[in-house]
Amino acid sequence: MTEFDVNSLTTRATRAAGRRWPGAVVSAPSALPGGVSSLTYRATLTRPGLTDTGIVLKMAPPGLEPVRNRDVLRQARVIRLLAAAPGVRVPSIFFEEDGTADRPPFFAMSLVDGQSYEPLLDVADSPPDPGTVGVRARAAAGMLARMQNLDPVALGVGDEPVVTVAEELGRWRRLLDTVDDDIAPRHAELHAALAERIPAAVAPTLLHGDYRLANMLFAGEDLAAIIDWEIWSVGDPRTDLAWLLMHTDPAHRFRRSRPAADTAAGVGMLSRAELLDAYRAEREVPVTELDWFLGYCYYKTASTLSVFVKRNRRRSDPDPSLVVAAESLAEVVERGLAVLGAPAVH
Image (cartoon, rainbow, N blue to C red; front, top):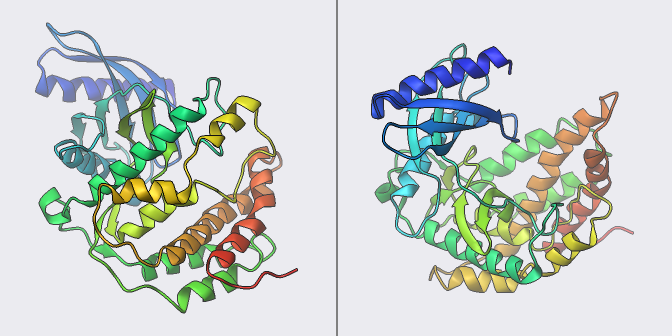
């Protein structure tokens, strides 16, 4: 995004803020790291008579239709609804503006201070201590349960189509069908093992779609906000739960080794049983067939990473983290097969 585009965004944001607070100004934008589904900037909101406030501006990528994971206003919608729900922590939505591919929509939300950190995968300048990691993990499990206790209709997302696990399984298969077989060996066997025993549906809930500690902001031990709502949906609650549980012992990796402080932080990650206990303390609903959903999460991981690995192979300057990820994909699939009880191949 060019400097002119940034200035254009802050001009539009100033107009949008002014409709809520006459005389407000949005200034000093700086890019924040993020994915490809949106452009994200930190900025300052100045309002007459009030202290300057840090905000986050999130805009759909220019030149692309703002649909699916690029539909930033859909993200703003669910964040706003959750902000009104008791016990759920998300940023506050300040204002938004509709748009088109040529004039992309955007929204502004509060800038929440905190650390985003995946204990068994990430590297940080100041990683949390093991005790803090355990408290964070327990808080994440409890927060997931509280969100899933919300009735989708009462929350305001009852008009969303319910995405079934069979549909999701088909989605990840279609992605894997586009990559060479050597990228994720035995992925077809894992799909077959999953497809032959798809669990019966349970009452649908709101789904984050990538619910793990790295998609939360923590102030010390306190869970300050759940972030990155690009792929939220309504569906089987066990998919988000299993995704969180999978990250207590992920098979994939992006580094061959991590610094000692990060390795120590990872030791504090709770076990699956401990996380499940924390979840059940807030949500008194039977959880069945979790092994299937864990196998599904390994399959989803293999699918999403395989596409990145495929693209990385074509680059003249491959991303080293994806080279390492490629080395782990066979183990990801094997872990999925193992959790489903399939025999290992030696």
